Length: 419
Image (cartoon, rainbow, N blue to C red; front, side):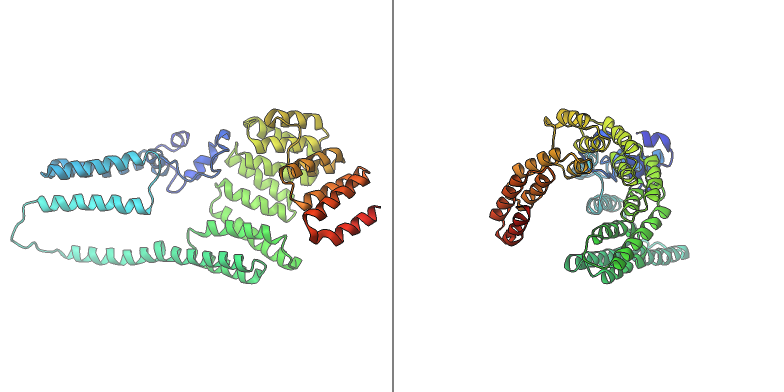
């Protein structure tokens, strides 16, 4: 409704509901899908896509269909059946949105109503003459259909198939960077509306590639390719906060913290209350060493909706990094009923500040939740060493050996070194 008020006559343009969703995002929506691209209500979808004129155009299809039925169709059964179909379909669209399958049914019904109208009209035996204009119209429409089939249907179909092939190659051999980048280039070569999805898939692949066992040159190559494509995406869609978020994450992966912060500032301008943007900004500031500013941002995100679990954990992390452990415990206790939670990032924050007693407590919580994880016992042993508790460290290593016999040789070597 707020988006409609901003552009009431012609709306925001087709497929642009995501811009409205981001701009007027409600923080309480965090349990839902984070990136809606439809209002899930046909009235509001058309108000956003085409404004009041677009909505009236859409409603006129129903009005003209019903007019044809009730004014020109003598068959009462046809009136009842097709009025019921249109009414049910319209009611259904108050809660979802149209797709290719539903459109097939909708236009088939409209086509049949039109057929019934023609069938009921009085027929004449005299043939009608065809004007030259009609021949020209048929040729023009035929040519336009061929072009539209290629550019609107066939090219995106080929691009989608190429993207699926690239995803298959990633599943088979994710470390074969040159082949996979070649696959992505094939998709980009079609230059369709699917480029945005492809760029996001490339960004995800680039983030994962940084931990692959490949050369630094290949890691840099795939990261630069992903950054270049996401920069193109922002140039093509400068008002999409999601694209700015993807690019900022890539900048952070490459150590370009200042560029990431500039991009995140723009993302927050486009979506002022999206918590994910707050989180990534804080992450960038922590990487820059500005823990105080990061804490302030995380507090803003928390205040938007204090029951959001991720916001609670992130605020506690920011508090720990600013030596406010008591505040962190207070926030966690209020949200989770416990002063500590099994959270890897929080554990890392305590370790960075040298509070290894809290690190120990969190590892014990991890082990309580997953007692059969040998690595957790090894990590707890390392924490006991930081606390100077050698015997407890040995006990944890022995437990790790019991759980995972393959760790025996390495574990016994660690025990011997401790002794």
